[in-house]
Length: 275
Image 1: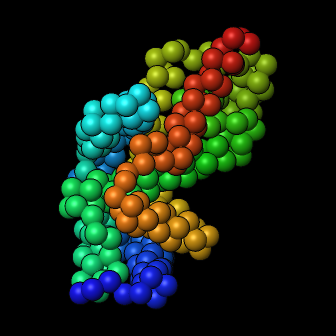
Image 2 (image 1 turned 60 degrees about the vertical axis):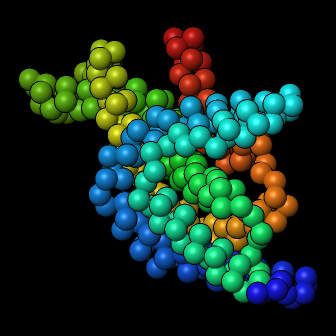
């Protein structure tokens, strides 16, 4: 079908993208989407969280190669799939791919190569995953402020206070003279916790955090829909395919997600240095 006039084409495409975002990322849509996570995705989630820094490093290296003139090497590196493909991501890519096919049939879609479309769909799904990580970091930060009155931007900084709380609770329960005197005693003489207990707590929290990330889209998707972020992200995807170019720079959502990890690590170093 021949392309529609430019103004009509753009407005019709924008309307289609808005309808897709509302259907896929609204309350009912995201609930239906996350049903696909009840399975192997629960096993993939911890591995994908661990692979996230590797994926960002590869994107940064691809961007540097592109700036140095090694465009083909950068494009090859950027096209590598680092994450284990989750069922949720697969569903998003399939749905968005079907939308692009429909738009192309109506003369509204981008005239891009299948490989380029596939890469764009993958990056879109990965960006959504990065937002889920940011949502998890905000939840952890809120838990730290509520429970311990301190900033805990990630699971690493939450592990110490959580291990301390668990050890304190166990010691009070086991105190020979009862809970009341036990709380007074351990307020004056805090329980010492071993590094092994902190590591074990950190590992347990990492697993819990990865599971929270898997379902964080139940919160993040509607918020991004209501604020227009999902629609604008889809519009940028289509604009990039129209130009026939693929941005070499990492998406800002990936940088924000890793900034949380960096803040988490720096907070641990700072507290250790202060003793």
